[in-house]
Image (cartoon, rainbow, N blue to C red; front, side):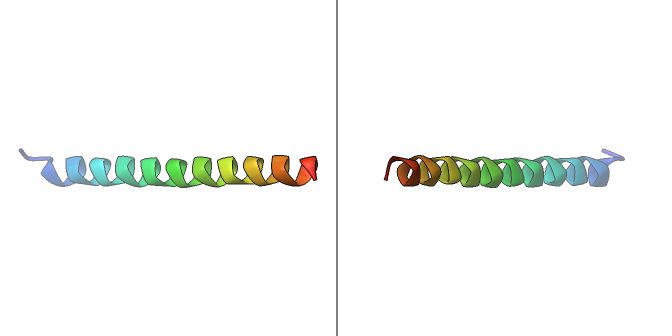
Length: 41
């Protein structure tokens, strides 16, 4: 395992990307829910 560091870095980058995407999608979902609720009122 000569490139253990690069593998670990790639794993960290992938994990970070997943967290960012999950946070953005959750925020977008909440924004859509709030928009629909306020639009109905």
